[in-house]
Structure formats: C-alpha cells, structure tokens
Image (cartoon, rainbow, N blue to C red; front, side, top):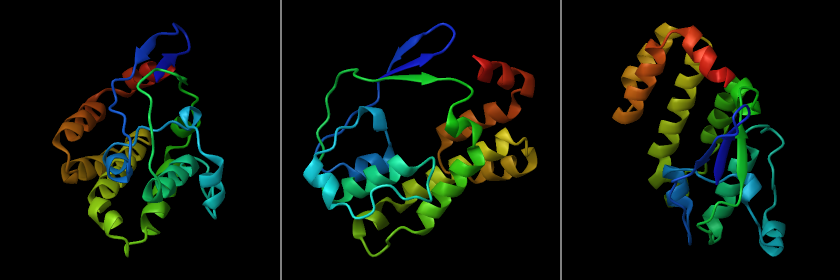
Length: 178
C-alpha cells in the first residue's frame, strides 16, 4: 500500500505486516486492511447476512472485514497495489466524534459468547480508548485528554499522545493542512 499527500504527492511505502490464513487475531491487534485493496470471493460475500451495517458511515468496512475474518481465511499479496491519498479533508479526519461513537457502538455490540472475541477484547478496548483520546485532542478538551492519556495502557502510543497534547495548536493545524 502506498500513502500519498496531495501537494507534493509524496509516496510512503507501507511497512505494515500483512496477514494470511485466519486473521481475526492479527487484525484485532493491528488492523491494516484498506477496503480499496480488498478482493472478496463472491460466494463468501453472499453468505454474510448483513454486509454493511447501515449505522456505520466510517467503520462499515472495518465491521465487514472483522465479520469475515471470524469465519474465513484470507490471502494477502506483499505488493503495493493501492495508493491512498491523505489530506485534511479525509472523512474520518473531519468526523472524529462519529468515528469514536461508531467504534464505541461496535465495541458494545461485540458477541462476548465467542472465545476469539473475548481473547481480543483488550485490543478493541485499547483502540476505543485511543479513538476517544484523539477525539478529545482534536476538540481541544485538554483536561479530559490528560486523564485519558494517563490511563492509556500502551506506553509507546501514550508518549505519542502526550507529544500531540503538548504541541501548540497552530503547529497541529499547519500539519493537518499538508
């Protein structure tokens, strides 16, 4: 996968580890799927009762992929086949609160009767916490952000979040413009 910015069309080759086989556990820890790079077998696709949850505008593809990953094996190709353009007007960037609330709804509706979901619950909870912190930072709710960052379990990401918190708003806005 390639990521590009609009102004300079800088290409960044992804170094994300790709997965094959039963990938639910791997995606729970590190979701790397981009819907534009996904090819789905028609017979498998037809077996999924609710393909895209109409309540999800941002995480609909995530929800679909995670449903498929529970039941089906996946194959991946270790080549850059997709170019993704990143800019300040990306839908998920503009609607951080919606992203957080959709993921929160998804999290609340997990089927905890399945052992594989229970096994990965901590990763989903960490992602929910991360999305909440990002939302709080973007809305400049610094006091709540500090509290959430202190309670965040991942020390590397915690450090990253603290840097974002301490970075002046004009610098963050400048970075978002690129």
